[in-house]
Length: 297
Length: 300
Image 1 (cartoon, helix red, strand yellow):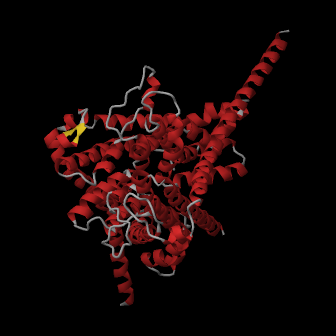
Image 2 (image 1 turned 180 degrees about the vertical axis):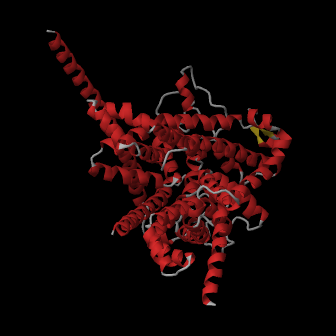
Image 3 (image 1 turned 135 degrees about the vertical axis):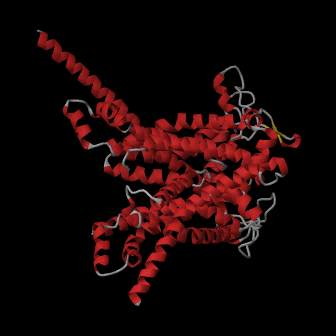
């Protein structure tokens, strides 16, 4: 009798747990369903071309084009990658190959803590410290708020993601590879460049792509330093680099800034922004998964 | 003659190779130490600037609200605490259950086909996908489902439900890893004594994996404390003391955002930021302590 009850409990718990395991995919399904359902009227009314290709976002006049924000998101991500990737990969190689254990024991917790600091704190630091510095660049129309400040803040925010995953990938390269190279008389650095990094290539690429995913999804810190103007960023004078002094708005920022007071088609268009962001990030993440596949973790 | 030339040339290239290595390693050191320097700069600046306004009064008086930026942060501390409690309370049972299933019950399915292995594959895909979705999308979703469709309004409950979806993959991954690290022999011993699988899991494997599971939960607490985007669109912005789970509220991180963007009371924002950073540091210390214990136990 008691044994039988034990087995009944055992059976039912198994299915209860399976249900628990399926909650995640159910939530993913719900997220897809709700953002699509709420965004659908915008797609019907404005059309995919109008949403993606429209240059003007003016809710008051029922104009909803996302081109400016899409370009803003992409540019700030490019900027963050340009600043962040060399540092993050350098840090990863440093921790995996070069750093003495005692130094590594300082750098690793520091990187972990960088990942934990709230994005609003980064945003605040950007507003109070970084923006006034950027404002000192003498260019007419430069407010300090804009792509450059946002890129720097974002670079710091994606650094831990890239460093951690890339370091794992570098560590996963079998010892024999390196020993073979060193035995042939290569220096440590030549071994890193010629053997270790190529062997860890797919993991490193995945790390960078996941960093891109994080950059595209970041919201609050971007709102705080990027200026939020709905314009397609242009160079402020005839130096093309001043493009990065231009203000901009990200897709994420567009949602967060306006959702609290939006109604009707405006609200639908913000959900459509969410759909665009969702699809963009899904593409990026599946690309990362493609590169990670077949690599034992 | 000829040999001499080769030796001198190889000596030259050797010197060059070592120089290159030295330069490259210099850059690597710079990159590694930059991470530390950035951390020290951000934490140091925020904590030092914040320390100017932090005192008992700041912690114990409610914010005045509106555009003044006056007052302290007492209600936002309480709101953050409630929010953490609710979110973790919702996500932990779900996440732990999922992790137990994925770690303990899927072993025999490896390489088989059928409905169950398919479901497991789908479940894993769900966890991975959820982990990659940006937080503002969770906010949008929470706003559409919990705030509007289910009429919970801007409230602690709506925010906690949306937040729970956000941290679910964190808890699942950490718990699964902790469960998988428990040696097979633990399970075999228990099964050999006639325990059912569930008894084995609940009485033997889960207790052994507890430090790892708790690490995941503490990590999630950190995520909730620092998360802003989700709560910005689900929690409302009330600076008043929350009285029930249906009250709108303002977490510390959200309060910082409003102070910086709407009031320009940067000193108070720094104070709030300092408290946030200090709590994250404490959380990281707890995690490091726990994972060191975990490693010690499995080895010992």
